[in-house]
Length: 587
Image (cartoon, rainbow, N blue to C red; front, side, top):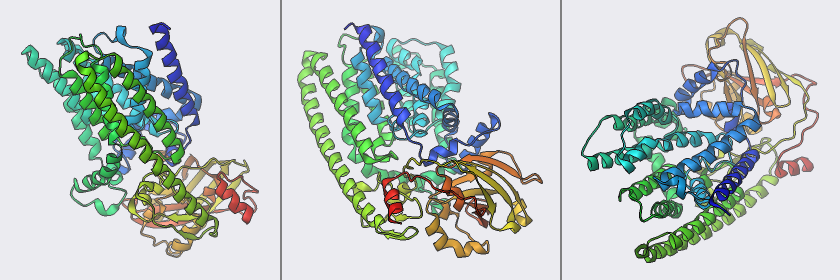
């Protein structure tokens, strides 16, 4: 097989695998916030600004995410697969250096693809989480396209127009995600400083884009909504010193990162080996260490896909193990055949040590998966014996279970996690597929004095018009659909009867639709507020609430429960999980 044929074969294989993963990616809770129908394209920008103040500072990431999922499904899947294949090629350009066109092979593409999958979480979240993929894929692709810095470090070339063009690109990328921006800024600043020191000529312009990256990092890091998100959705942290919450968040991730130090070491070793492949290259001697260090920082800044995938552990473990094994084999081949004699013995020792750590990591991960499966079975057994609408007492979980075991909150069964970490991850559980019976039914507000609500649910599509009355007409509101409605109503129904509820965190584990998410800029006028949304499950609408609040969403002023008009309920529906099916058979 010629080198050209190998490149085509590797590219087509990677594209086919990535496309298949995207096709099989399930929609999970976060995805539905991107699927609301919009009246015009400017609504996306309005929603991204709203996102900045209420949930997340990643403005361009949010815009890209919404655009991708707003596209036809087939087109979105193809675009995402192509973008990730492009990311692999761009990484190959950087890794192989000056003569990359003559040196790149299909083996390089496969190895780089595996390492990217392992070390950058949302690249590897294809097959797991649809909106998780574009959040990091596209900002990473743009950041790696900072090619003039590679040229500056490799050949000492300086082209002012290229750096001027990178200024808006740096702003766009910096506002896209905070996982890579610091690592990218350090990398390009270090490469520029090294090249300028060698040439003896210092210029300011090449340092402007990395400075802008850091400024944009500070902008999204300090976003009001992001401070809520990164501090674990706990309102108690909001008024604390600006660094307290993030430090606690990072401290909590330290143990998780330690579990995957072997993958980070493998990624750093891979980049170092590939960079040293051609010992006759005139590349600067510091370049391999700079690139390997940057890749290591990039991996450290990201959260591993295996730990944070909203997917069953079996899928995450299997995919990560396969990609890790392929990467290790390619590394061994590179170290064995493309290294100078004086480096072969150290590399073999290093590869053997890395392989031992890698094998230990696989065994540890397998044990974690086995413990998770056993624990999930115990929880499922308890859930089977519980009545719908009742609480179940979950036994203490092994530490490794917490980060990636997601408790189902369907049909009124609430499995309360025992600690803070489990509680946070429980909010991101994977929704099961539900076969919908497309029978229309109407919704009316339970308290007509609070306002007139008329809604229709057709399948999973909710269309509504709401005209608030009384003092509610001057208050903003959102629609909330708790995922554990029966337990929610039993525990918190009484305070809502007189409209005095003060804790909107009760809706944390449900689907929240702000009216300005659905139609930005709409106000409570005489014609009412119209909205359209896609619900993950049609029966959620039967237990929904209209929540009016004052000032911020935590100051609830009135809660109006929605009710199904008599005689128009679902005749039947197919439950999506085996557990729900067994409950139905028992009833």
